[in-house]
Image (cartoon, rainbow, N blue to C red; front, side, top):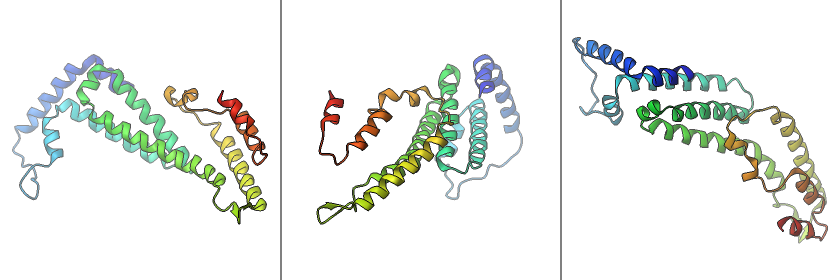
Length: 216
């Protein structure tokens, strides 16, 4: 991505001219372009016709990068880590595109919107694969029978929660998220781990004082 950005920032006009000359040379050759089955151009065909040869080549490079990253992500056994890998690399590419005025203007925001949507999907998948499974241990369904808490079930839920959280902490504490916005936890983390531990210890104790104090 650094090479692509550098080429666009420093040599865009020269590269654009080279691709135009190459495209002009190809168009002078007697070739027949395959048509759509109904005789009309598809939306993708029209977009490609509107693109400059330079933008077309850049998009091709980005497609190859995406394909390479997708293949490499499959080497990870954990789905959550696959999502982290794709989020990190996708975010890096997106930042490089936006940081280059020439490149950003050439891409017309289409690629940026598509990539942002994919990053959000990876983020949602990560949450589903990691935190939703963990929160499932705290589901109140099945805890009460005839208005009473089934203690063995409750203990098993907490046991599962502790085991899953411990394993997740050991695994994900070594992972890295490069995006500063994703790492600004103070924006979306309300409770620290000590707060959560204290709250769990006070469950079913008939005392709501801790939560009241924390909200002040």
